[in-house]
Length: 239
Image: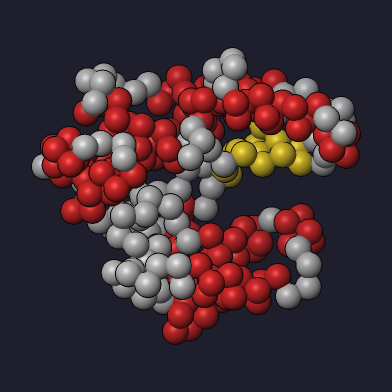
């Protein structure tokens, strides 16, 4: 996946693609830009930098340059709203962090084993790393003044254990990403402008897209709660 760090580097493909989109014909009609980067940096690159390169990743620097890129995007209409969504908390159990990194190809199995035996794999440390990155993004957004920061980790996570609620966990133990269908329902509740853009029956259609997705993972370690109570029920039962 694309990283927030990449957006802070001149010549980066994603950086250039975004600039070209904003500068192109579609950019003249933009009302809003929403950016969701950082998961790769926090959940994968942190470990690669430490266990492969033997260095410490500078998440504060990545966060600042990420926000600066968004803030400095020149739009045809100065009223275009810019929003950065914070990184989602890790859905992984401690024992799955090392194997997940190996599955993604970020680390070798030997390097992943070192992670498994370290404090870096512990849930609270992982979630606090997310918080640190998000706080750096939030702070820079406030300093620049033209970018809004938002996240919904408080709704998706148990406040005492820091664990992602079942409604938002993938059926694969190694997937660092959350389930989009249930997460989208939260954003539809939060953002009236997003709800206004969706066609009739969109929310109901999320059940179909989730079922289609789950069919691609017949080897999954567990079932998803939405398979029993539906996407809407999974979200409301987990609030």
